[in-house]
Length: 192
Image 1 (cartoon, rainbow, N blue to C red):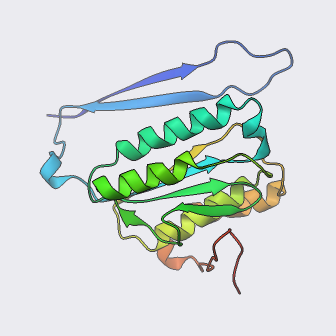
Image 2: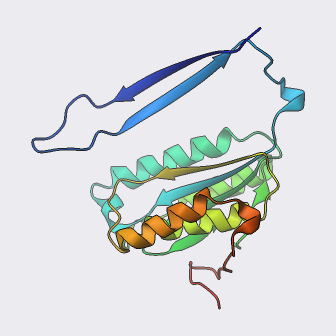
Image 3: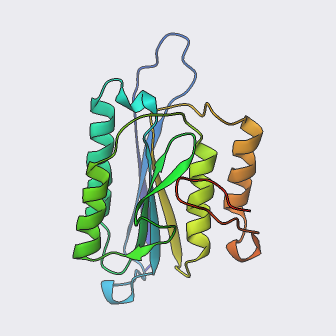
C-alpha cells in the first residue's frame, strides 16, 4: 500500500497595514504505506533554540510562552533521542547540558533540561545565524538519521548582516562530514 500524505496550513489571516510577511505552520501527516513501527524508529537528534533577546521581555508573556513551548518540546522527546537546548541572544549559549554536547533524552535529562529552561531570562540582542551555527556544530557530532532544530523566536535578525546569516544557512545545508567545524566555548564565543 502506498502512503497517503496530507498537509494542513495554519496562518494568521490578517496582515498589518503595509505588512508583507505571512508566517505559517505546515503540518504534514502520513498514513498507510510501509511506515516503520516504534521498534524500528529512526534515530534522531533535536536542538531547541530559544530566543532570549531583550525583545522577548516586552511583554513578559513572550519569554514565559517560549519557556512553556520549550518544556513541551522536551517532554515530547522519546527516550534515547540526543538533544540540547540553546539560548540565543547576540551569541549562542548552551542551556542544557551545560557544555557543548548533546545528551540522550530520559526522565532525568528531561527534568534537568526543563529546570534549566525555567531559569531563562530575556536580555541582549538577536543574531540567529550564531544560534544556527551552534546547532550545526552540535549536529556534526551526531550519527542520527534525523537531525531537527526548533527555533522559537519573535524577532528580526538585528546583530549580524544578511550575508553572515546566509553563510550559516548555506553551511546548514552542507553534508556535516565535509563541514569545517569550529569549536565553541560556553557563552557562544568561538575558540581559535
